[in-house]
Every structure is written in structure tokens, then in C-alpha cells.
Amino acid sequence: MNAIIDSSSLLAFVRYYLPFDKDSVLKNLLKEKFESGELVIIDKVYDEIKFQSKGIVIKELEFLSDKKRHKKTSEIYPNKRFFNMLENQYSNKAIIKAKGISEVEFEIEKTKYLDSADCRLILYALNHQDELEIVKPLIITEESRTNNDGKPFKKIPDICELSGIPHCTLQTLLKDYFKVDMIFSI
Image (cartoon, rainbow, N blue to C red; front, side, top):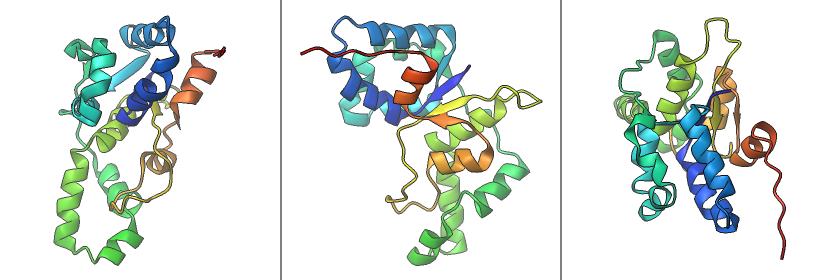
């Protein structure tokens, strides 16, 4: 299994899991998974986490600073099918209409989106499926399907569903894939 992690999941890990990880068991597990390549961080996600919450993810998960672990996405180009999906299925037609976004404004928004971490996660996953689509990378994100941000493009879980990319939350990754069984004591 190969999992690509979003900035929202890294931030959730640092905020909600690390404070209870007194012996660094979870932190070490995450480090092992990055070192083995089972867990992947793309360059655009790393760029995002450097500035989120004053860089807390980088401070707490210092091993993420190793640039050898960052998967480059600058040379992944969307194909014609992806552009078609972007314009016709990944876009939020209701928001575009409600905001009165013109064709020119939509092209500008599309260009911004194509350079975003969200889009790069999707492109990386699509580019790293095997030819028979037996092996599909898993995207880890805490994003919900609720479009409450007013952006012209759908959220990662919706785009994953439309593209046939498996996805889950950090909790599901830890519990179902990494078989972590957590016990709390007071």
C-alpha cells in the first residue's frame, strides 16, 4: 500500500494524536512509514505545512524536512481527460453560478487550482496507479465532503470518488491499514 497524506491529516496528527503519544510510538510509526515509502508527502503539501499554524507540523515531525522524502509534482501534467473532468465534474457549478464567475475568472481559478496541493495530490495518485489499476495509491485527508468554503472546485473526497481513487481519514489509516490499537489510561 502506498498512501499520500494531505496537510489536513498531518495537522490533525500533530494537534490531536501527538499530545497523547508520550512514548513517541505513533510518531515513530509515522516516521517508519515515511522511510519505507508506504506514506508519501508531495512537495506542494510540504509547502503548505511550512506555514500552517506557525509551522507546528514541521516542528513536531522534523523528519518531514528531509527533502529526499518529498515527491515532486512539478513534472506531472494533467492530460486531456483530466482537464475535461476538471471543467465538467470537479467544478462546483452551483458556486460558480452563484458567484457569477465569468469564463475568464474561471480560467484564472482553474490555473490556481492546478497548482494547488489538492490538485497535485489527485494528479500524483492518478499518475501512480499501475496500468491495470490494481494498485491504487490511497489519499489521506481530513477534508469532509461539505462544500462550505465557497471555492469553485469540489473537495478531495468528492474528486477521489469521481476519479476512482481510494481515500480515507487519518483515523482509518491508523486503525484499518496500520492496525494501530490505542488504549488510553487516566
